[in-house]
Length: 478
Ligand SMILES: [Ca+2]
Ligand SMILES: [Ca+2]
View 1 (cartoon, rainbow, N blue to C red):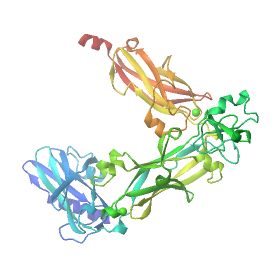
View 2 (view 1 turned 45 degrees about the horizontal axis):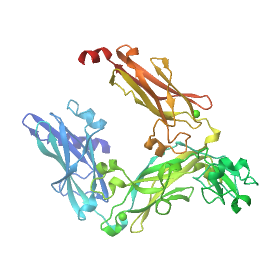
View 3 (view 1 turned 120 degrees about the vertical axis):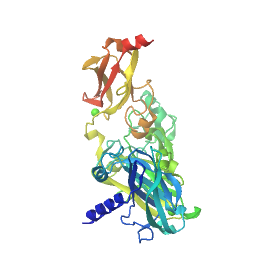
View 4 (view 1 turned 180 degrees about the horizontal axis):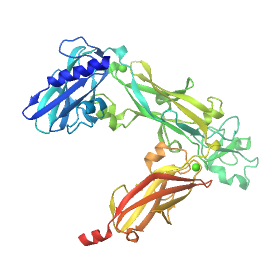
C-alpha cells in the first residue's frame, strides 16, 4: 500500500516538474528515511553520515547532480545508479537506464537542527535547476558518533585455508607467522645434518636468526625451523571511520579482529611489517583513496583501511576454532573510548592439507579487445594451494609452448598482499616473451591459460580473452 502512495507522489511530482523551453528536467531526493517531503514537514533525523539517494532525468541528458545543504553546493553526487522502478516509469530519457544518484553527507559539519538537502541538476542542454529538496533534522552528539565501516575480504561463506599440519617443536608450535616446519636440532649440533637449517635455528622458539651450533640452546634440546614451506594466511581487510563533534571524539584509535569471542588481532598493539604475512599486517591507516569519493569531508577517509592477517591453521591446531563455519568480527574504538562492532562475516575455516584447491590468477596481456601486431609478450599471474607446476597457453585451441613461471619473472605486490603464504606469493608471474603475432591470421583470436598444479590438476584461469591481430594494416600505416 505504501508503495502505491509513493508512486502517486512521484506522478504528482512529475506534473509539477519544471519544463524549461524544450527541455524537461525531473528528479527526486529520497532520503534514507523515506517520507520527508516539502518545506517545514516533520521528518526523520539524520546522524553522522546521512546517506542520500535519488534520481534525475533530463531530455538532453544529465551532466552533473550537485548536492546542496541549505542552498549551498557541497559536492557532486555519484550519478548512474540502477533504479529499476524509475527506469520503468520514465523511459526514453538519455539516462533512463541508470537514473539514480547517491551522496553521503557528513552531517557533523552542520549545527544540529533542521536542514534542507537539495539536488541541483546540470544538463547537457545547459539547464541548471534544483529538481527537488528534502528536510532532514541533523542530530549529532558524541555518544551517537561511533566507529563505522565494513569488512571487504573475505566474503560471506568464503572458504579460508590455513596450514594445520605443523610439527610441534619444543613445548609448542613454531611461532605463528615465522616458520612452518620445525625440526628438532640434532643432538650433535656440529654434525653436517644441521648445516641446512643453521640459519633458522630458533633455539627457544622465540624467533628466527642464526644460532651457533655450539649454542647451549641448541644442544639442550632446542629446535630449528626451516623456511622451506609457507604458512597459509587469511587476509581480513576493510575500512573503519569515525565522526565526532570535536577533535576529542573524532577518529579511530584501534581496530580489532575477533573470532569466537577471542581477539586475534589488534592494530594498536600488533601492527607490524612481515614479508611472510604479505607486508603490513594487523594495522590501521592504510590507503583507501576510493573512500574519499564515497565519504567526502570525512577526516581520514583516504587512509581508513585496515589489514589483518589471520593464521587459521594455528587456531584449528590449537583447538581455538573448529573447522567449518566461524564468525569473523571487526570491532573499532574511537579516540573518546567508544567502541562498536562495525561488521562481521561468517566464513569456512579449512585446512589446506585436506583439500585440493583450484588455481586462480589473471591474464594481463593480451587485453580484451585490444589490437596487436609484431612481437607480443603474453603475461599474467597465477597461484595454487598445492604449488604451480606448469602454465599452458592456448591460442584458438592450439598449444603455444615455452611459458615460464615463478622466480625471476617479477612480482605483483597486490597479489603478495592479498594471498600471502602460497608457495609463489612473492613471484606469481607467468610469461611468454616474443610471441610472433604474424603466425596468426589478421583478425580476432582467443587465448586461454591452464595452470597445472604440483598434483597434476588443471584449472583454466582468467577466462577467455579475445584480442585482435592486425599485422597487414599495421605495415600499411607504417
Ligand atoms: Ca566518535
Ligand atoms: Ca590445486
